[in-house]
Image (cartoon, rainbow, N blue to C red; front, side, top):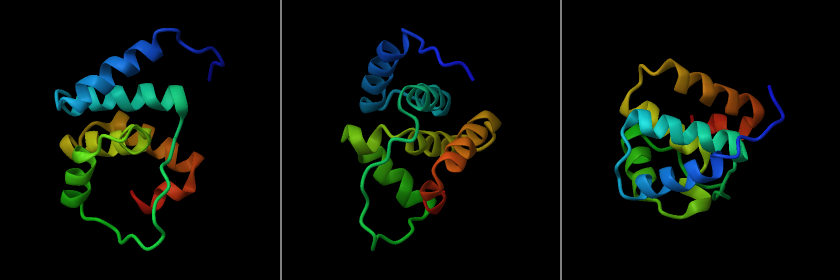
Length: 111
């Protein structure tokens, strides 16, 4: 993996965040957004309550769609999961999510 940062990533992230907040991203737009976030910040995680029960896919999708807090809604793994829930046949999204799970084992619980 290269150590160089693509200078266009911050602008892409801002544009995709705006489109995500407006609900304009389909499964593939969410995938691109997840990859951009992964490259910029890795698996940035929001603090979660330890007593939170596991959510069903429907509940996860609904709460993830409703999030506007940047620290939660813009976590790379959350965006990738939303992409997979919309189109589960995108193998690249699964691979990127798996890579995040290897890097941060606490994500496994959500997946």
